[in-house]
Each structure stands twice: as C-alpha cells, then as structure tokens.
Image 1 (cartoon, rainbow, N blue to C red):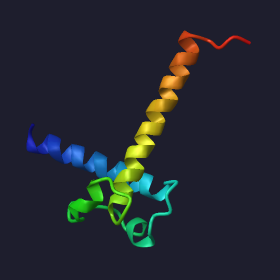
Image 2: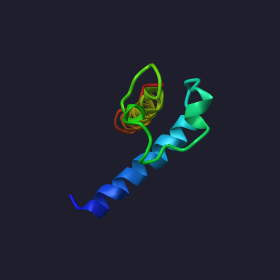
Image 3: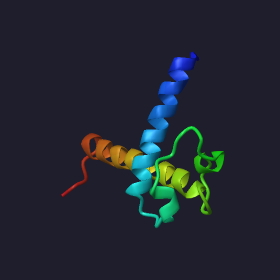
Image 4: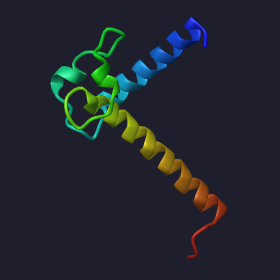
Length: 84
C-alpha cells in the first residue's frame, strides 16, 4: 500500500471517528468530543474499550454494526417479505 493511500485511509477513519463520537449513544466525556482526533492522538482512542479514549472507537464500531444490520434487515424485507 502506498504512503498516499495510507494517508487517505487515515483521514477517512479520523473523519468518521470524529463524527460518530459526537453523535454517539454513549455519553462520551467532553474531553474526547471537544477536540477532533488527529494523527497525534493516543493509540488508545483507536482501540475499542468501555473505558477511556476507547469509547470513541467502540462508538464507531457499534455505529458501523448498526448500519450493517439495518441494511441487512432491509435486504431481507425485499427478498423475503413478511406475510401481512
């Protein structure tokens, strides 16, 4: 993977991480949502955990899972409609 491609992926991850941290169902501590995550942020913010900075990564993982589940439920309804 090229360095430019890696930087693009980092930027995309940080962008989503920052958006989800603000809109999370978790009550994230203000110090985690008051500033955007960047390349100088601690690695613990990227590792899902129920404690500390890992809450941001956990929120992102749960958001992605919820979105996938929603898509799969809609596909199932289209493929196999529920009887009325």
